[in-house]
Image (cartoon, rainbow, N blue to C red):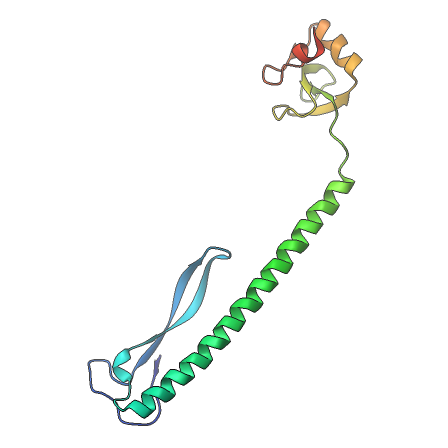
Amino acid sequence: MLVQPVGGPRVSGPASGRARIRRQSVQSSRRGRFSADIILVFMFDLPPDLDRLRVLEHQLQIWAGHVRQAIVAAEKREAAESAARTRAAANLDRFRPPAADWTVEWILGTQQPLTIHVGDCHMPGHTGPISREEARRLITGGVEACQFCRPDTVLGV
């Protein structure tokens, strides 16, 4: 789409009197990729006389002020959204049950213990909480201890 500026004589040039609007994919550090209409203005369209250049400068300063206000509003909005996400995450943590001190990993589809883990180990698959005494009994009974969190060492077995 071509947009023709209104009024006044123009300086002649290869792109005099034209601004182009095109859809362009833009990368933002906060929002990822999104599409935006980018207006490309060729500077050949500037008026030659000082009075109109001063008017144009004043209009651009006004627009720059509007852009700054929009940026401040967007930053406040993002800060409020971030604070809301943080509060929501904190509320979820209140309802999350505490991690078990010891867990047992079961053989899939059975109730046979496969491996014993310390409660905060990230390696186990299908687990259930057990007591310290139960973990000690299972390890001494021949159930394998996790090679990463080493519950046998923690239990002193």
